[in-house]
Structures are given as C-alpha cells and as structure tokens.
Length: 299
Figure 1 (cartoon, helix red, strand yellow):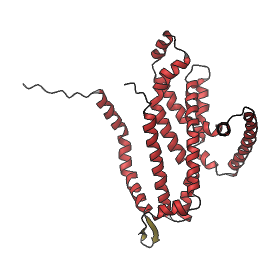
Figure 2: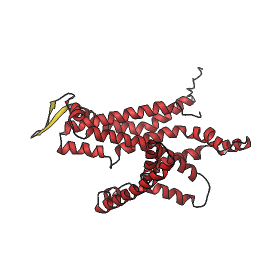
Figure 3: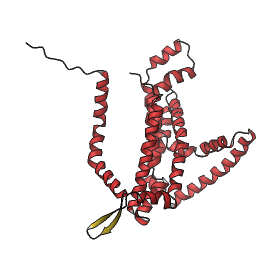
Figure 4: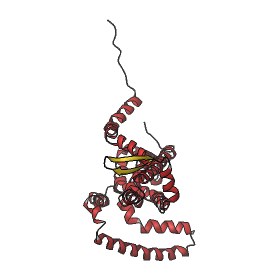
C-alpha cells in the first residue's frame, strides 16, 4: 500500500493562514460595499457632475478639479496643512500618554478597575448622542470657557518657562501638551486598552528572571516591556492617525462636505477627498516602514 503523504504546515504558514482568516470578513465587506463606491469616487474626481432629469451627467475635466482645489480654492490648502500639523503634533502625545497610563493601570493597587473605567470613560462620552451635543449652545459655552481657561493657563506657564530660558519651540510644545491634555485623554482610550492587553500578554516569568539577574525597573522597561509592546505601537500609531483624520470635529472634512453641496461642486469635493485619502495612505505607509524597523517580534 502506498503511504499517504501528510501535509505539514509550518509555524509561519499557520500564522499567515490565521491572519488571512481574521481579515477575511473585512476583505469580503470591502469588496461588496466599499470597492465600487471608491471607484466611483475616483471617476467623479476626474469629472464635473451635473444633475439632470435622468440623474446626472459627467463632463470630463481630467486633473482640473485637482488644480482648482490646490491653486484656486481659498481655504483648502490652509485647512489641509493645519490638519496635518495638528495630527503630527498630537500623535506622540497620545502614544506617550497611552503607554504611561497603561503601565500604571497594569500595576496592582486598590481601585484599579475604577481607574480603568475613568480613563476609558472619555471614549464612551465621545460617541453617539454626546457627539451631537457638541453642536448645542451648551457645548459651545463649555468650549468657550475651556478656551479662556487654557489661554490664561498658557500665559502663566509661558512666563514660568521663560525664566528657565528654554527655546521658544520647546515652550510652545509644552504649553500645547498641557493645555490640550483633556483632548489627549479623550483620544487615548482605545490606545490604552491595546497597550494594556499587550502588557498583560508578557509572561510574568520574564520579569521574574530579570529580577533574579538584578535588572532595574528602567532596564526591565527597555529590555522587556518596550520590545514586547513594539508591534502594538504600530497598531496604535495607525489607529491614532486614522482616528484623528476622520473625527467628526475635523475641519477639513466639514470643508469637503460644504464644497460638495454648496461650493464648487461634487467633482472638486471628490478631488479633495482623493488627495486627502492619498496623503493618509502615504503617511501610514511611511509610519509602518520606518517604525517597523524597530519592531521586535518574539516568534
């Protein structure tokens, strides 16, 4: 009798198949519900859309919509640069605070569950009906009061830091961190949970072995904790970038919506969206390539 060959799957192949199965629902959903609208958006960005009795008519404009958005629109470039600057400046703050908060919450102390709930509460308050409240008069008054408080606090802090003779760029960044701390805490809930899950996945025996070798807390962080969390740093960077670029408070998204319905037309709005989408994709690719060089995979 011929011996039957046993098909063996290696560890790498199992990892690949597991990842493929995990992402398979997204692939199906993207193919069925998002791929066709995305292709249509590309087509609309290259045409001028005119409504008529039969629906709409497309008039070919090529790159005209892109040229109009970049060279003729009054505020698109300004909003675009402001959006990028705000995201890149708050990105290290959110990642740093999330890692710090997750490290604290991973310790054993009384009231740890309450502390975790409090830090994740801003994520719940930032969804659903609370987001719609941000357009109310009450939310406007609260925002004005917060802005006034941040203004006076920033001036006082600038005077104190000025006595130390720090560079103006450092002073401006520190003031931005301190006055923007409520927004940083609000935007860090999911990242804290991801880092916390990563911390709990590191075997305690590794830390016990480090204690036996006489490692300090600083050495354990850089040699055990940070390498163990390095894959999740990329995850949180990607999530934070996408979240900041797609938040309902994003002024650029509001501008694109305004241009689409009451401005230069749907074609120009789609051209703006395509440039916005392209930049986000390019930024994410750079982050994955650059940060990926420092990722440690314990396989």
